[in-house]
Image 1: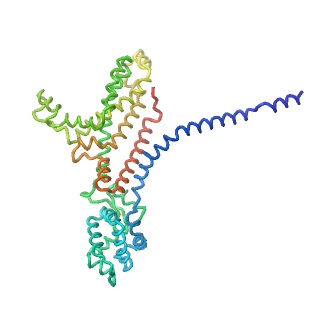
Image 2: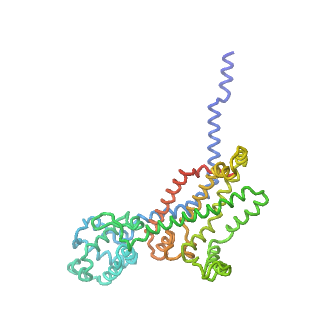
Image 3: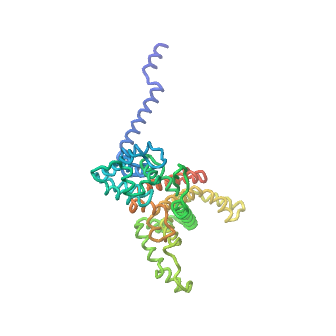
Length: 417
């Protein structure tokens, strides 16, 4: 009898075999899901992740001088930075300028060096034009005679830093800092500092827009969440309709409304509330109005999604126990909506950090946000290294703010009703 039981048990699947089959089936299902999502993953990697990664990599890359004049770059890396280099380095400079001019790379090198020291472009172009095939007995006195700036140690120190890759120069310049001739990091003069103030202005504008959206959006979300479904759905159209309109069109509409002879100023003067046009455009007020209008639906939808899941039983219970309606709302209802408030504030704040069109059209000279400076570096100055450094800091700030928001309100625990 025991032998027959043992044989029957040996012929039946064990629990471990069942678990192995289950895990194998799970792996097959996961693999099928991955294969289905693979085209989307490749699309995101090639059109979104890779361009961002390349832009951020530009913040430490310094390939213009090393790629165009490799021999000179190696000599400069070996130079101690004291005084001016020797005759051999001057000869490498002459041959490097000639080769870069023939290959068409001299303009790229000159533009890169002009970022670090103004008029460096004219120095390189003038020197390259005066270099001929018949070499002089010594290049060092010949180049110094062409332009006395070649006898300036600062000129060579700038060239040495441009020959190093990777480099921290762009990351330092993005926070208005630089490397001194002694090798120390120091802040730039006050009249040359631009980016730290722009970062502070970007954060302050984004915070102000977030507060305005919260103050205006919370009552609207509460109304939508507590009205009957039929009325709520009708009013929800007014929140969703702006998404169907181009951002540029909405910003241009505010451009028309806020100008001195626009609808708003005409209405204010017609009602006797103002005797002259109120400045509402090309200043901070125009930026805040335009950005709040664009980002308000994100705040409303984030808070509304949480409010719909809050049961009215808790507020009724608090009132039945003697709590004042206002006290019941503040101490019972509002805490349950904090995840939605946190998610809405984070979403609006992060979107506001990278805004470009609205501040560019409605803001003034003192309202430039960091995204506008990035656009200037990429489109006008062609300084992709500095643009990459500014973008890197913007990504870092976004990560820091996410951590802070998550620690304060726990937005990763947001429940969508």
